[in-house]
Length: 69
Image 1 (cartoon, rainbow, N blue to C red):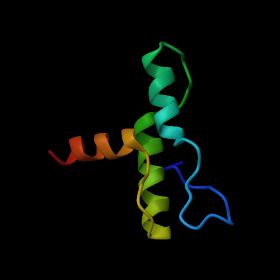
Image 2: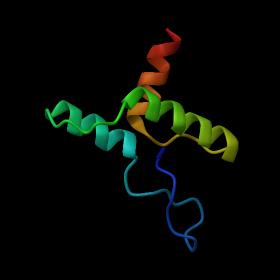
Image 3: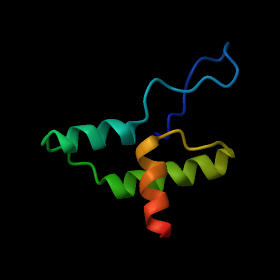
Image 4: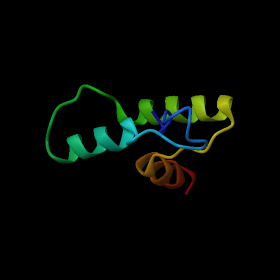
């Protein structure tokens, strides 16, 4: 979620790909994931706020920006 993860030996390294981005891709390809993307984005914002980290999901950042407009 939010691209969190990475390697403990590489300071600042993020995970490979954000879960939100994968769900968005699969939804776009017509796969039924059973995951509510908007709720997942809410969770990613919640955890990044607690950890004081940037949300590295491109989809989350785009949709959160759209919500504000």
